Length: 321
Image (tube, rainbow, N blue to C red; front, top):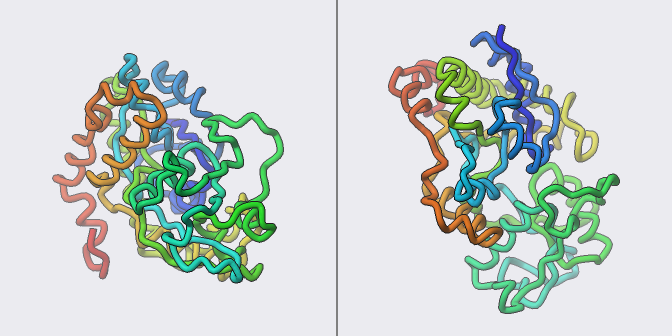
């Protein structure tokens, strides 16, 4: 059994990762994966190129500029290609959709979610740079916040009148609605986020068999997640409490929102890459010096796909890989 480190960049990855681990998907491929700990962006940019950490589940934005400065970071596969946010507002606010956010204050959390909010609103005609809307970030937009205390959930900011609205994903949307807030369905945003399988090009070149077994374990986990809803929901309810203890309803909503978006073959979408690349340039102009595809090495997922591995997993089910 090979031991592998696979830290995550955001707690929001854990509902999926818990299911992959508990289902035994990595063990089927001879891997003991240490996944249940967080790594900062700064540490990831040190430990991955140095091969002290084999894989990371994230670092979606900063990597392009680092690549321009000689970094060896590489993306091997993608689990979700769309965000799954809802617009959360106070019921008396008069806000019925994104257009009503003009001249309003939107709350956000963290560097990448903040950039997602910026891009989402800009693509819909509300540009922060034109003062059409204001985005206030709980972490001040830092990639690696140093505050020890975890901030209040974004929905509480909305409830308490600190901001007019926020784009929130489950289970926060469920908690918000239970507090009397309104959660409005909005279009998803094509985006590279959530669990992205990242490594360094040097490690990948040295350990192709390990890389393929790790990716196959992820694919097995996606299959289990999609085809075992009851078991997966139970795992989420029992193990994921980073946003508060989940009951059956909340756990089921988290499960459903992830399951419908999971990519069985781990291919990224071109629009998701284009959007995250736009965010990378906004964060650091050096990102414009590289082609956005320079960081993506998809030949391993292609080889697994060509072997028929994923199609065989879904044979006999009503799922289409």
